[in-house]
Length: 440
Image (cartoon, rainbow, N blue to C red; front, side, top):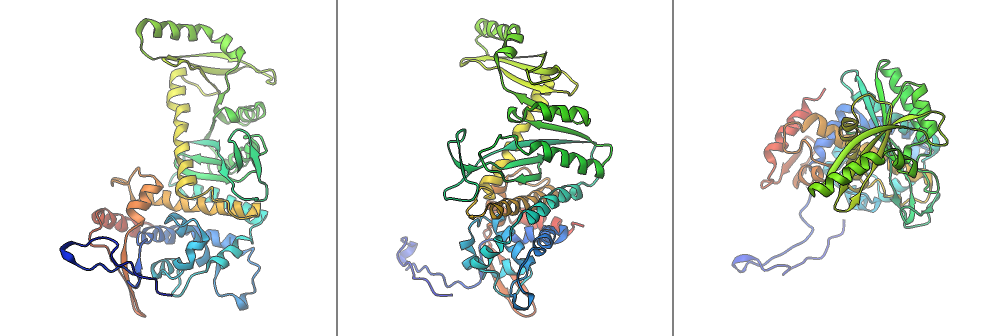
């Protein structure tokens, strides 16, 4: 690797010392915490399973292949988790000895051009296989058959800056984008499905819900499944399907004049109480309502809120049993945590980095980001309980656990990793590493 120029005099060093800065430190890794993710991966076999699916679509002649699929997949997923979303970063990362060892190689990893060509292998069959693997990984992660599963559906935007295949302008978001659909169950991801943005936000959700219910009930026949989403997923066909397949639901519904007329008494009471006390008021009630396209009336929960900004009514349609206030506050509002998971996916793990031209390649990128999230979530669930990082999001975990400096000494007999002596979380890192080692 070519030597870089020095930066003498960048700051004034104390005691009149001369400062010299260069890139000649040798094998020093800035992502030594990748050892933790690598340990989780080797014990759970996440990247190995992903590589098995990808390898089925590898068009290369094995006689002339330098880089096997397994190290390439691990290299890409672990680099995403460590904060390297660009393939260009691998021009230097491929020489990182610790990343090489974590990926199972002793020599240089794949170059950016090799990884870019691998993305072009993506096709509908490969992405379908990886999507299935994501669900199977979720099922495998459950230690005991769950009694109930809350499936959170939500869509978001992935901004596009080029002329990618399937690129459309979305009026709601106000820019060119894709419209990925996510499904989470608690903190675990089940679906990361890329869609063009010129469609209804609920498109494909019905089919995905049906497939999920079928697979989850095959794994756990007696499980209760609850579908939860915002008003963008309030579609008569989906609700009817849920009712006919014993799936419970709690879904937002947009306010309209009919609903407001049915609930005007509660709204008026909230307004009167606010004017009398000056305190923000929230009152809960319910009614029976049927839109013109519905074949039956359904239970609608109403939150009547009045504050200094005026009236703020919200509505939720559900077939769950329980009090209106409890269902709204404790069940429906809890879906807000899924939005935090999407932010982790989009912002911390670069799921919106849809820089490839082909739509299938961008779907592959989204899925690789999803599997990076699987590793981070498994690390958090299995090894961080009781530590200061137990509830930390992916960006915080990367900053404090993965971005650790270390000197690497590697020879034919050993790999010696010397972590930074001034690392402030050395005790926590040691305990987490011990827990990873003990994983089955």
